[in-house]
Length: 233
Image 1 (tube, rainbow, N blue to C red):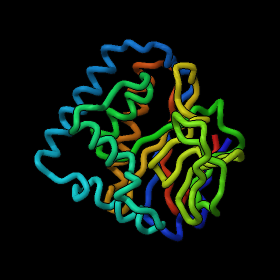
Image 2 (image 1 turned 30 degrees about the vertical axis):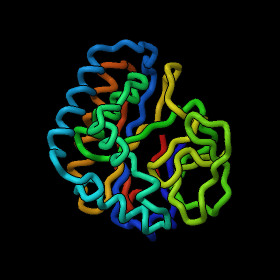
Image 3 (image 1 turned 180 degrees about the horizontal axis):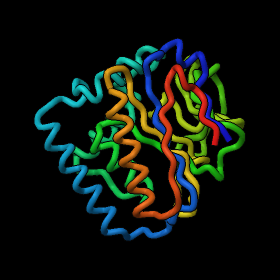
């Protein structure tokens, strides 16, 4: 399998960085994990403290994503980047546990203030690609059964069957979501220019170490850029 970042993405965001953690053989079945709950609660408290009285849309971790969304033609006031949504949920006290793996990447996202996401590799068909939509591709969002295809030019993750995440990191597909049955996962962390290679590398290593330590299995880390647009595993 491989993950390919297309030229049409790089033409719009030539300096973006995409960190990838591949996890195999994990145990995501235990829903009552006090250790992971404590990690997430700590990350939430720290993020809320860092926010203080700041307006979330203008926060340095959020504002560049709003500009990026505008660059590919969507309204960031309606479609929030995953880091904006996560910070809003944390600040409002409504961030809930999903499952151990999702809770871990949410904790890492809040620790490093970078968008994180993930897909169940058993549900992915063909290669993973980060590209721009032609418009009308198949997409059913998380928790829904209705089609909500992307608009032309929208940044998307996709496989051979259709979109698995719309507007870069806004909304996940129901088909490839991480569940208790997930044993193999593709996890990604994203940074825009100014995010820093060291920062995203540290976030990836943090996530890989936590997954291996707390969920078992094996993990590997890769950092993709304009000069390295393909990962094969």
